[in-house]
Image (cartoon, rainbow, N blue to C red; front, side, top):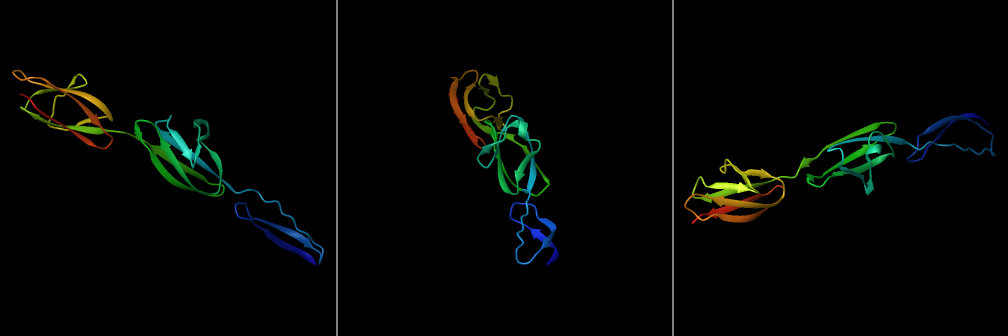
Length: 173
C-alpha cells in the first residue's frame, strides 16, 4: 500500500504520469490518455494545385495548420500542365511540419533541322526568329510552317511532350 508514480502509455497517445494510491490487492487504475497529434502546414505554387495526403484531398482552407495523428505520410501536389511532386513527411507530437511545393510547368522543346538555312519558320502562326536554338513550348500539338522565297511551303503538325525534344526536319524543294 502507498502512493506511487504510475506511467500510462499507449502508441499514438501522450504518455501520462500520475501519483496514485495503491491499496493491495483491490486497486484498479484508469488513466485517460490524450491522442498524440502534430500539425502539417502546406503551401503550394500554383495555389490552386491539388494536394493529397495519402488518398485524401486537402482543400485550400485546411492547408495552413492541419491537425494530424503522428506518423509518416506521403503528400502529393498536382495540377494539369505542371509536373507533380511527392514529399514524405513525418508528423511529431505537438510540432508543425512545414511542407512547401513549387510545381514546375510541363515543357518540351522543338529542334529545327531546316534546309535551306534561313528559311522562315512559324509555329502556330508565330514567327520563330532563331531556329538555331531549341524552341521551348508547352506539351501539345503545333502547326509548323516552313517557307522561303523560290521554294514550295511545307506545313507539318508536330507533337511535343513534357521533357522531350521533337525534331522538325524539313527540306524545302
